[in-house]
Image (cartoon, rainbow, N blue to C red; front, side, top):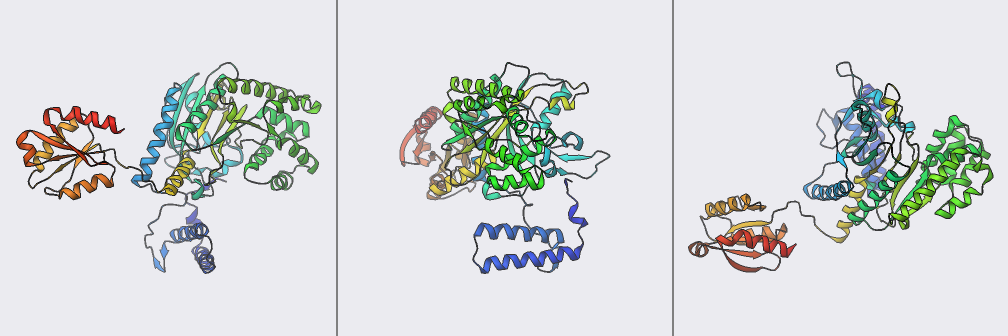
Length: 509
């Protein structure tokens, strides 16, 4: 059953007290053993979470604990500057491919969300009954998009959507996995010829990862029809296809023996059938793998497997035309656990990164989802991709930290400074001229700030130009323009100021 936000209220106080004591012991033991800081931080977070539910800290009842909820975080100006820069680059890729944007509510009717995610449905956040509507926080942006298409009677659109989604997942903040996070989706809806929209989505992923300069990456491809054909050829009962698919999806994080154990012990699959599945899903390659699979007589008896191989062959051909074949790997272990996928599926991973965030983008074709919301079961074929921006942020933050680089948090181009006292009104007059010309500019809010302090502010904040006004300059109708990085100064007539600022900024960019 999905998690209820009011669940903490139902736990007896004595039980909570015991849990606080037990968790406190866990933290104490880890600190005494000088355990890994990340592990200690995670256990401390659990302790604080329990104390928050109890409403007390250190025995002081109802004391407010200042912390973000589990699996969430605050973002400081430097982090936000990095995030906005990343989103701006991704949006530029989406727009290059002709996408327009939409928005949907952060919560949906619970019935809209349930039954669409398979086993992951247990991670949906339910909300309390509000005025007769049973609601839940959105789990992703795909199901709300399908609901939007059905409700608005839209049969074709190319859209992107960037917004927060919510999952009651086990958070791992060091790996960029949170309970509240942004998704960055690009989708093509409509009846088109095979694999033309699909290969463009894969190309969009490549362009996004290239423009973000994250290092080497790989995009794994597979096809749900081929997986279904493999399951059928191995003797998996059709009723277990989706649950076995969900188990196979864990192969990127767990060894085969653990996945096999889940198939047998939890999914009720015979061991010899699980072993057959294992032989298939251990294979990967390129066009040569398609040729190899076509020689498999048992597999070729399954029409869905033949259909899947034909689709993959066409997709790989198109990947070659779009010059992305060197980034592609046909991988039979890729399953994508969500139930709504019907065709090609893909997932992008960073190769050799030190952060270990796993997948940074994923998606696929989902042709039947819109029909679930249509009274006449009218389907709108769809294919899309979601870029995992939170994980990308984690990678970029770690890289900047390793290099000791600082991110600019503001975009000020010119700082207006004064060299003598009582010139703040002259600074204000210049600021107005700069703002009206579209120049990003600021000044000190102290009337008589020391010139050295003003120039240090420019250096510390990466402001490229400082404009200095003094009594001598005022008398001649001039200002001094200083390049902060080189400390080179030139006198500029007020009448030519805007033109000179734009020239200098262009030179510095």
